[in-house]
Length: 157
Image (cartoon, rainbow, N blue to C red):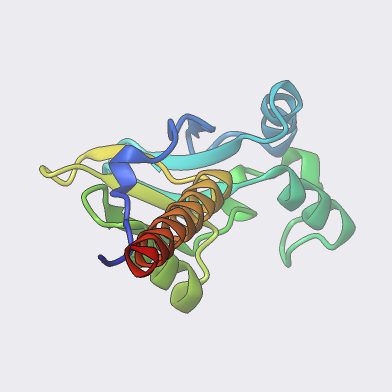
């Protein structure tokens, strides 16, 4: 019996995000992140129907400590000028191993899930991915223990 590999749509709730417009100002983003510091802001352009990037609380600290070129007043900058643009998209029918491979190779700032129709279906939080990986390891360990226990019982007969 092989590894139990969960599908992404079976993992977590994918609700640790807020979709925001690219013209949101950094001080407005700070207010949103104050409400839920574990949230990610997903920057979405309605005109082009495209996700442009992501922004976390850690990014707020980063840009205040080291403002990007061309940004004079960080708190008045648009989020689209300071966001992470390295986002990845994966089908929610993909499995955890595929998501882990994506993280390992592309190192995206955010992973967006799309459904069978390629519509946005949610956000894969790091916590959800780690929890799923731990679940897989526990399940594999339990299966191995059960197999070994069965072998010992068979030998003792």
